[in-house]
Each structure stands twice: as C-alpha cells, then as structure tokens.
Length: 342
Picture 1 (cartoon, one colour):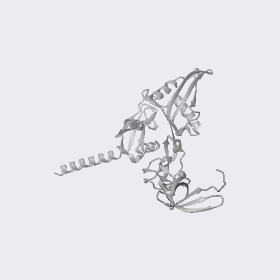
Picture 2: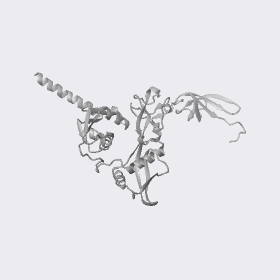
Picture 3: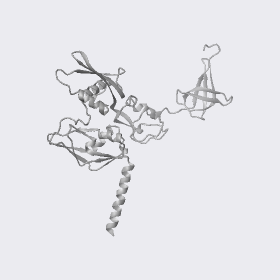
Picture 4: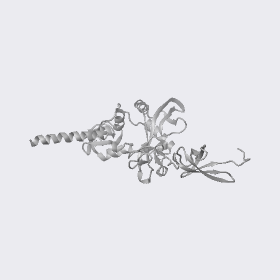
C-alpha cells in the first residue's frame, strides 16, 4: 500500500515538474559529457534544446561557449557558463528552464581535427577581415562585434580564405553606402593580385554589437513613469544603433508605452514623454504678443508632452484651436499685433 502511494506521488511530481518546465518556455538540458573535434565549444555541444522553434534552437545551439581542450584533454562547462553566454546573447533567462547536471565534461579525442568540420560554417580569415573592417568603421572593439552570415555565404567566404601564400590575392572590404552600421549590412569584397582586380563579390550579413545597454530591472507597467530603480545596465548583443546608443538618462522620467517584462532590452519605441496635458483637462491658455499677454481657460481635446501641439476648445466660445504645451495643464498660442507681417 505504501509503495503504491509513493508511486502515485512520484508520478504526480513528474507531471508537476514537466508542466513547470513547459510553462517556463525553452528547456535547456545539460549533457553529462560531450566530445568535440573542433577548436571551439558551442552551446549545441553541451546541451539539448527543447520546446522551441527550429530557427531559435539553431541560433542557441550555435552560441560560442569556450575554446576546446587540446587533443586528448578534457574541459568543464558549467551551468553558470551557459547562463552567462545566453545573457550575453540577449536571451531573457526568465524564459529559459535549465535542467540536468550542473557541469558537463567536454573531451577532445587524440588526433582531433584542428579546424571546424566542413559541414559546419565557421569563422574564416575573410569573414574575420569583414568583421575587423566593420568594427573599425563603427569605432568599436573587434571583440564586441559579430557578423552573422547565412550558411551559403559563410561556406563561400571560407573557401575563398583557403588561398594563401605569395601568389594569394589581397582582399579589401567596403561597406555599401559608405559606412558600416548595426543590423543588416551589405559589403563589397575585391581581390587584387599585382594591383589588378581578379575577383569581386557582394555579401550580406547582420551586424550585432555587445554593448552596455539599459535593461528592465523589473516588470514595468504600461504608462508607468520610469525611475532609476526600474533600470540596470547589462552587456547585451544588439543589432539596432538606436538601442546601442540609448542611456539610462534618456529613459528616466519618461513613461512606458506598453508593459515591459523584466530583462527586456529597452528601446526608444518602448518609452514616450510624460504628457503634461491629458484629454479632458481644463487648461490655462496663454495668448502672447510682443505687447500683451492674455490668459483664458479651455478644455484639452487630446494629450501632449512639453513642446507638442494639441487641440483645445475655448470654454466660452466653443472655438477649437491649436496650442503648444508649455508646462503642466498650461498651453500657449502666439497672437500677432495689428500691422505685424505674417
């Protein structure tokens, strides 16, 4: 009887744990051991990824974790290593459940190949030249810049990189449009031998940069005014120049345009100025001219922040006109003096 009760309890716990894992989003299961043939260890070597779509799973599996051990040696990858790399790649850890052992032993057999397998695109000399050129153009440390190419492009760049020696062509890289930028990018490559162009090609990729950016330190409600306690600076990979340039001072005092979850990288579109005038407010209207200033009252027909134009209705005449928001529940209009030119 007791054994049956324990069996039922174990089954109930298994169902509960499974439901919790699924509710948490993507499940990352640490392996107990792994073997690599390459010089680097990627996420997919040490974990199994469940409950996510194919492209997302492939992106997570391709994340670089560490250098592989020497042939015949072993290295250890911990849960903390996995969490740190996920966070660096902009993954919200609140959406991830990590299961399995806390460490994975990674071995590299004797005679392991020194280069990445041909069936897996990897960084190459030419791809690295593109990355260094783009990083210099962006005035960023090359270690903080990543360029993702599709599989076909990555393999093509690797094949072109195999030519070396005295007779090998010299490659130059020029971003199209004259300047590199974060996000989708197109670059022109030219190979020259003895001053003559022997090959030209154009490739596309996506540029991301690891930057210190403001991240929501806790859940922020829609229309909530943002304070310093709502934000924390974290190193994240971003592909938007406006996001990379954002600072906490740009956000504090403004309000969220929608609900923002903890761990979300803040972006300009997530915030707006706090309105000083709201629809239905009774506002003071200041009519100014070089010689006189008159005050009256009106009802705001729409909301607006400082410097924005809003429509208001005069409470006596019912006339609707446009005024500029100056301060809390105060708007202004300009009045030309008689004889003043338009």
